[in-house]
Amino acid sequence: MVIAPAPSSSTRGLTGSHPYPVVRVPSVPMPRYRGLRLGLPSPKLSDALVAHAPDVVHLASPFLLGARGVALAGQQRLPCLAVYQTDVAAYARTYVGWGEATAWRWLRTIHNGADRTLAPSTSAAADLVAHGVQRVWLWRRGVDTVRFDPAKRHELVRKALAPNGELIVGYVGRLAPEKRVDLLAPTCKLPGVRVVIVGDGPARRDLQKALPEALFLGARHGVQLARLFASLDVFAHTGPHETFGQTVQEALASGLPVIAPATGGPVDLVIPGENGTLVPPEDGTAIAAAVAELVADPALRQRYGAAARAGVEGRTWAAVGDELIDHYRAVLAGPGVPTRVPVAA
Image 1 (tube, rainbow, N blue to C red):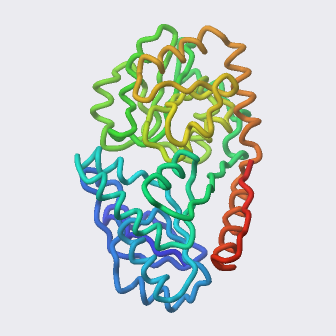
Image 2: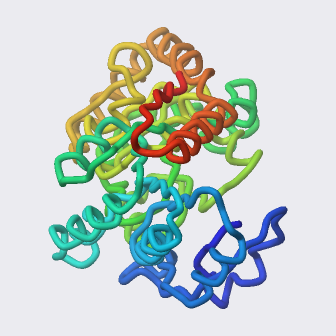
Image 3: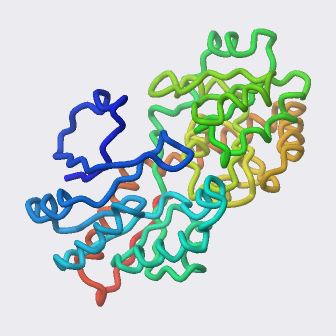
């Protein structure tokens, strides 16, 4: 059973059906980012949990709804596992302008109420421990290596993106202030380079003004997204607040050299000199310099791309799912039973 925030009225008809029960609880839009909704505690939560009688409670990025979930798990004496996915404190700083310390206090309370917290990267795990969260384990994300594959590279797509044969540098992700896509401005000025931006969000209009040379494609999904990834030459990730960086991993699976900030989740994914380049966070000039190096050296691009693909082939969702099941078994065994859970390659 999944308990999730109700969608907005404009998207309610798009949620589709599921092969498992889904209980929707009231939700509100996140302040200054209405596309993200926060689930609210509801009497439905307690009733659904009791009726379903689960063996384990899994909290996905708990904050409001998750706080009630961890409390109910404690009341029902159910093992509880919390997954840290979103840097809520950074969002508070970016969108509200205050509340970072308050957010961390609240997160610490929630996560310390769980039997185990899973962090997606070594950086996220270190942040949690530094802010007083206990029982932190590493659980990285998987990637669909069948969908995201260098073989999906398509010359007609490349011709449409860069009619003059430019080297194509891509960004894929939400267009929001904290993603710092504006840092691609110096890269847009490089000769022989075409910047392609895939995604949507509240910052799109401002970014189109700031990056007039870039091609904005909007959101893409499924096979279309995979074909776009594989048809790029270089992937540039700009956000400094990523707990993991799933699009970085999808780019690696697509055989692309990656340029990313030397902070957060990308530090675990990008190996400088092997599959890409790490640059100082929030430094657009450094991103452009790294792109220029790859423009000038096709052999380096090819070597990085081959290593990128090879490095993620063991990180399938099946392997990562098995790892999660081992974490479930560990919390079911109880706190007195040490259980080692291997991390997917």
